[in-house]
Image (cartoon, rainbow over all chains, first blue to last red):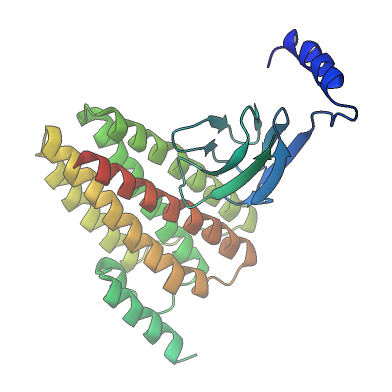
Length: 104
Length: 174
């Protein structure tokens, strides 16, 4: 989402609902090849940020969906656009698995 | 104390880890560091051969991932032995691994195209399986230094990931 559209969407959200939930950033930490927490819940518009403490590059990849590259000792993020629960994994180390349950 | 190495050895034999099965005695930390470093170097050399020879993007990408991860693990291992003031010690297991790897590289070097891709990736599956078996049953249980043990445990998770990744690539080549 660009900086230009976000205020517009926020205004629209305010107009549509009496008590809008502000978009949140949910942090998932990667340490020694483990996503923690392994399972998170979020809403459409929220951002998931992965904080990689490992010296290894990882990805958060949804089969047939989005992919975030998370460089070593760095972060990667994505803003959730669709509702639904998705399982993701690291393409480099497919034994690393996580889940995001996205509500509308 | 008497039965543990025997059980580990039996497990290795069942896993078909022939070169590592020669390590009948419980290895010391300097030997474990040497074995782990050698195992990583072997995979880096195989990957470099694949990068040079393969024309399949998925195989070359996988090989690049192997170089990057194993170089990182080996750098961590070197940093740790330096910190602990331990000198890695060459041993029969390292030598057996290196010998088997040289033979495998010789075989791979003679292959080209799809035959090379298939042989390289299948060997990657088998090799990671073998190293993971050795880590789980012999190297991790034998390590006495906690930091070395922890590094080996992270290494095991990385290599288990590589094994799955290699299995995925092998499946895509069929």
